[in-house]
Image (cartoon, rainbow, N blue to C red; front, side):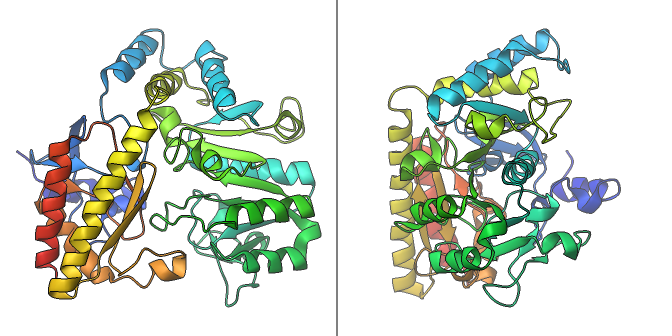
Length: 430
């Protein structure tokens, strides 16, 4: 039997950093990445045969667990008819119809092969629609690796963005302005200065990429009002929160309607997929009807569409979200109780929060409301806690700034084991 270390050493000879997505390299937590051999239901097994209770969920899409028989059956049936056509197929229309049913303001959909591609396309569409150049994003919100979005705040709240990745030209980054999540004043100041040239504002309405940060009351509505006032396009990036915090995503939960929505993860059921969706008067600016070019050979791939359709059928069942969200909330109640015990007995700060079927754990006394507050948690203790949990057979996202994901495959026994593992791990943290 091979080991995770041997496989990591092998991978580093041919893959950049031994991985195909940076966070998988375990740089945020240290140690050796686990190389997964297979997954089923609520579990993953690494190459050493060790089983883990999975709270990563492939970063979100596995809401019904791995290898659900209904999803596999539909994928197998689609695969028998061909893996890719590069031509229209019935499944992409069927999935788009379901998105239009779930989100009343959505009249048109354009599928892509990833959330990054969808977010990038939404930006281009907003700029083409408004004929403006500048955009607003939020520090700590992640929208994929498009150049315009790999930007963070400069020296002050009103500073132009500066690239956070080599290869992003400063001339491009200067069109991206960065505000603070849950701080409407920082957004208003940017609109006051640049409103006439503001094409759009893009936001994770429930942030999952600086761990789970929920919007304060009135924050999302304030964004809606500012965009309406200045004629800018409001984009909700619901790649993570869509079909996770509610069937209709953060927009259903908040009652705030964006102009454009970006989807991914769950609508592919574990297959590569993304989507831009919105009203016809904006979406029809895309080629072939309009001047905004967007295309992709594998967009609307029949296998991804089949997986998404099967997953949506399962999660649209009556009571699915209420029941799953309640179970996730109960887990978080247990996590917070463990945190109170650790603080009382050992002076260790630990807490958790959830919204729908997304959750987050933090090495701090209270859940944070911003990227700045997330950054104050004790990262060294998180690294210890993370590896102790791996030893206990619980797989969390390998970063202190990533949300975890709950699945319907998790049993009561899995949750009980997880809570016991948390208590034992917190007892070992120095």
